[in-house]
Image (cartoon, rainbow, N blue to C red; front, side, top):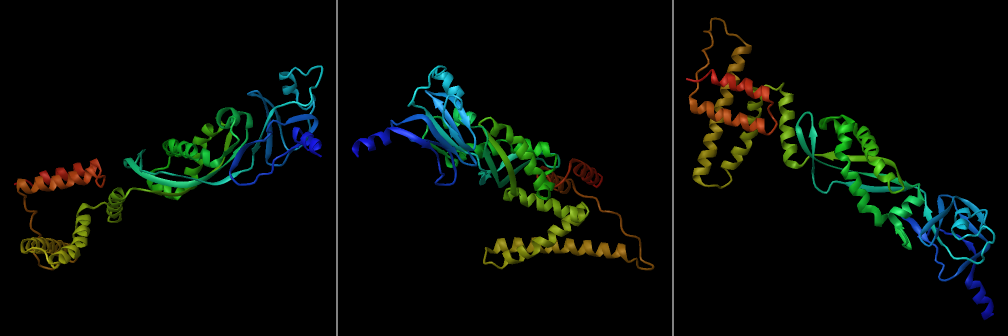
Length: 347
């Protein structure tokens, strides 16, 4: 019995692999000093491929099916081992199995905001995340470029590299899609397709095929989101600066009132109250002017001419407008028009 056990241990009749876990891309058959005999059977299941490697040289590749190992089925290995006249049995060779089924729900995302050019905002810093799927399609290339002689190679080993490839091509995808940032949320499918096309060559270079990409979310950092909200607010009032200032004033009054009653210093409360009163008076005057313009009173005198402004008032207003332009709320044309209007009111 001991002799028979020794013989069975030394020679291999059947070579096969049953995947024991998800995410395993490559697996080396454990020969452990055993040898393959002539006529041995190689079993390659669906969604698998098997590769023979002789002393570091890639030899024969087998697809799904049951294969009898001989000089006819191992032409490359036969040439490497000079078996033209006589098949040497038993023989040694490394055999690697590769999983070719889809690897699903792989995640990608921006750990930090990335800066991109945008035709509306000039430049934006955005965050994005989603998932993707891939398939191993070229075992020779994957073995040579990635897995090598390791006993096993998993998706976890490759995850960081693939995430980097996805993020590296986000800016290219945005440029190729031609979609402005404000429209990306409504065109996530187009953006995902552009990201797939931009990244696919990098996957192909290591024997993988990028099967699909999804974009689950695109967002701005919080500080830029506030500026975007202000710009949207201006759009809702027809980009009318006067109406926008009135809207901002109305929004600030509750905060001023709350601040004045929060137990702060007397000076702070007085300042807050004074500012609130000044803003309230400004709103009342604006409302009164609007009513006078909308409902003319018979016999009423013509509206007085616009009062000129002092130079310090003009400069203060211009500084505020310049700040709005720097934040992207005002365009260059809007700022120039308002500047010209203010300069005409100088005393």
